[in-house]
Amino acid sequence: MKNVVIAGAGFAGLAAAAGAARKLDELGATNDVRLIVVDQNDYHSIRVRNYEDDLAPSLVPLSKVLEPIGVEHVRAKVVDIDTGSCEVRLHTEQGPQALSYDKFVYALGSHVVRPNLPGADYLHDIDTYPAAECMNLHLRRLSALESFDGQFTVVVVGAGLTGIELACELPARLLQLAGASRAQSVRVVLVDANSQAAESMGNEAQAVIAQALSDLRIEVRCGQLVRAVSKEGVEFEGGEFIPAATVVWCAGMRAPSLGGRISSSLDAVGRVSVDHFMRVTGTPNVFAAGDTARFEICPGHDNVMSCQHGRPMGRYAGHNVVAELFDVPMLPLLVERYVNVVDLGAWGAVYTQGWNREVIAVRNDAKRTKQIINRQRIYPPLSGVRADILADAAPVLQSAPTVQIGSSGSG
Image (tube, rainbow, N blue to C red; front, side, top):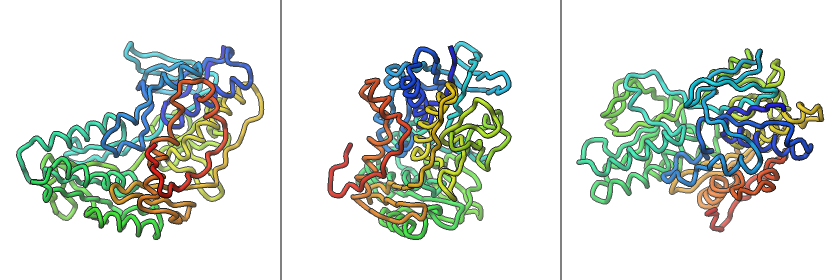
């Protein structure tokens, strides 16, 4: 029996597992190949929801998706990949283990790049479910304390999309925690080293986001660098100090260093180069998908680190890893459509289309669309029915999200 090992159960890894199971089913070869997903958690996290207050709905038990389609889950951390001996080395609760593979899919996602700053241990982040829950618990505990300077001040460092979504969510949450008597002490500060927030979004969308930040009374400090963090707050280069009980780091993402074990061709954020079939360039029998991989997803544009690209990359990687195993034609991936829907908290959202980020909806219409995406579109089927899961894993592209004009969109 052949082994296909998939490292990671995020958006790309889970999609790859289902895509591989679907292709095996199509070939009538389900009993000829052992499909194995390696992940240290027993759940799939809808990571893009980590800025929200209630994260319980963001967890999907892996067993609910993998067991119906005959995919094994090995709960372990991948610590090494040896492409010479075709082995994946693991750390499990029982100790070191190794899995041999005939084909391997590298889909370990990405992680926030935490800084080497004085007091960095005081930083929160929302990179993972445990980290986001830790921040949420910290915020909830503040309301039980005696008043102090900076108690309900949150400094969010990083004004990319993750930082903006978190910052826009916080004013309403902090007001509820502070209560009417301490409402005046609520303060959210969004900081970035770049000259403006949402630098990647283009002028039209930036103007919408700037309006939302202003209306939500979020202070924006661009062109500033953090010098140090302490229990009392954050100090900037230049000497300014902001008292803050909470500092959240949302600046910069990077692929795991393990990418260097399967390829010498890494981009600036550690992603391996793949072709349009998701095969790692120059490394036989290894595929990659999601935030670990880079390729020209459409003419003139590389894929971005997002579930929007990670999910189709995973589906195609799963399909093609089995196709190559059985020497049948593979399918190339090309995604010309690109959208962004950015949650702007109580203000609403902004929905852009195309690589030039043309704004096509704002406020409540965009917000309802964002809720449909976050609560429905990016989830695997939850029915536990094999046919549903395999159908969802077909190597096809979803249509663009429809703007939800005046509907509930609650999902």
